[in-house]
Image (cartoon, rainbow over all chains, first blue to last red; front, side, top):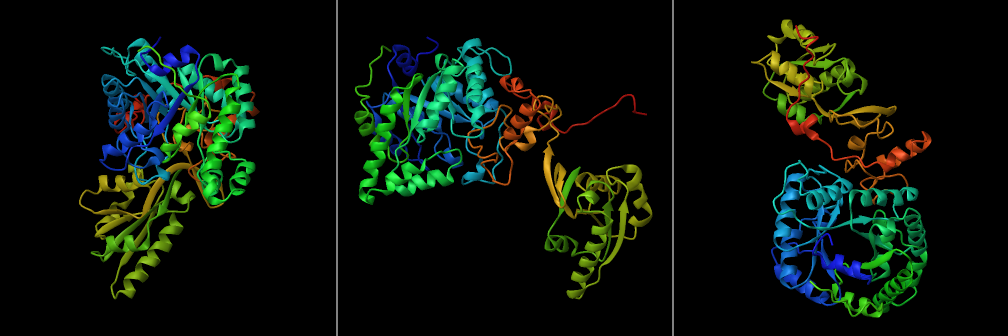
Length: 309
Length: 222
């Protein structure tokens, strides 16, 4: 084992892993993150804590992770290269690990253009591939990015993101290959609605043998309404929502749409369980955390495995 | 070239308010090519300023001069014969030219008439686009002649990110995805394998990370 991470142990056990995510609040209101996290307790193995997602200022991922850790849960520290240079990133990694946080997700982050501080400088000192490499070198070589030794190196279980639906499609497997080469241990994908395309991407992943080198978690986001489905199709960059999904959501009365959205998610999980190389599910119920237990249960992913700590 | 755009008239009028006689200095280099501060633009701005002052019931004398290269002390020296008659200088050159005038004429206020924007190239008539950020360690040899630092919104050296859609950047559909361009070019050149190599974290010391930069060519220094 590279780390003490529960997530790593679950992957090693061969069971499907389940993660979800919590967006920290836009204010100094710790009870919000605690409330969200409690809804997930017992239903997921680890919880991503987003880092200024959509480039809007929120409570820091690190601080929110500590609250989740105190609940006896396993936070995944998300960190974006947009807001911090390599000094600040490594400092937070040391801090997080010192608080017992041993999973992280390395991202470049949404551009400030999309958020509430479009006037901010975007840092991008390193990119997400170089970020993975940095965390791996910290863990496996005990070295800071600048080359100096670290005393008690942080043993992070390293995650990264992959979007099988962005362009150019032919580069999407190769881009994953870069992250694998850099040393990522697990991957959480963009929300999957176009299952055919995802399966095609997975074929490419298997052709390169990447599924044996990295644990791929399929990203699932339930839709609440047909409006949300249309928004994701038309407004969210790199999102692929087929017309059938829109039609299906539009085909039921408004009050039934949330149920239909959950049903679509559960069916997706059932189908993707059979895809060779899918090692788990990352269920992102955006501001709808209370539905995660239902999805996990209906998808037959309960009970969550117990692993020795 | 270095590109620039003229500042709004109101801003220029505001900073010239205290003066009656100014020197308006253009530059024959980059700002001429990008139609921001060459001889022609000097003439247009001069007339516009004088007219604006007149409508306010004031008078502004403008001496127009366009130098061969405003970032070059040799040419800036040509202003010596005119500088005493002016209370202030307005420069239509890039920031390098403005600063060269400020350095040479220590007791004369200098105001920029343009906003210096980027190092770029002309895409078509009237359109210029950013191409280079002067990072001091060129990677174009690795990326098919397309710069990911200047042209990717997140300056990813190992792109493209998950927001690339139909060859466009998620930030603005008017921006080409640099990594789509790089990939298309590597394919056209039969250099797809180059994509497989991870480009390591950049050493920004050669760029602005190391503080203001200077080039000293011992072979040329007198």
